[in-house]
Image (cartoon, rainbow, N blue to C red):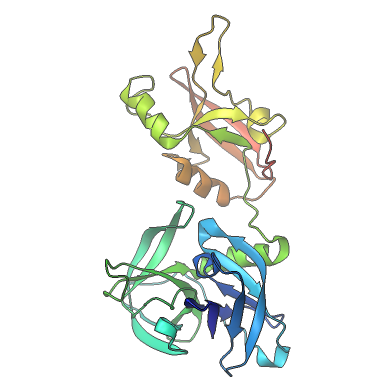
Length: 300
């Protein structure tokens, strides 16, 4: 199956269920005005947008094909993958429909950057040939189970150079149902805005924070939000007009926090309503706070 977005481009995808939901990469359809899906029987269907998660490079489309024409992919797991095991990549490289390449898993735990600049972690590295047009297609194990979604290649020429990357299926399985239900992914939040990582680094370099400190500094808290209820303190002026730095979130439960990506990863490991313990640095002293995670309030 291939996804044809504009006359200039194409990509790949796979059938998620018999309701016609199609999973692909966000970057495949990011700039498309219209998208059509061509199935293995060469029938072509106009697709509608269901949901996007740009930070995960995930998108879900829907076609109104009869259920008997839809064969959902069989979903595996990515937690027990091993370097060296055989994998198969299916896609539409250079517009060549239904191309299959074979290779091995050549690395695990890799990291790539999404279109939003957010890291996607625990990515699968493979030497199965992946080229432009393969994006969004399935990476299968030798039993034909989905273990990843082909997403990127490592090449200065943007063509196959022996290294390709696939988003792990556990990430896909976690977020696709949310995209189908809500149109977006539901990420638990502390409901605050943080200081940009590069500014926090400058504070350390200028000795305004301890050199060995790490974490995300609180810039503003949303009234009534989880951060506010926990007692996190934002950047503010004291009664003499001096700037007081906000709390530096250094740890969520047992996970150390180095930057905003770490904090988002820690929050994504939870659900809305979960209680978390925070270790924060305030006035060069570490303190422990706790709060319940909420949905993002999207207000200041």
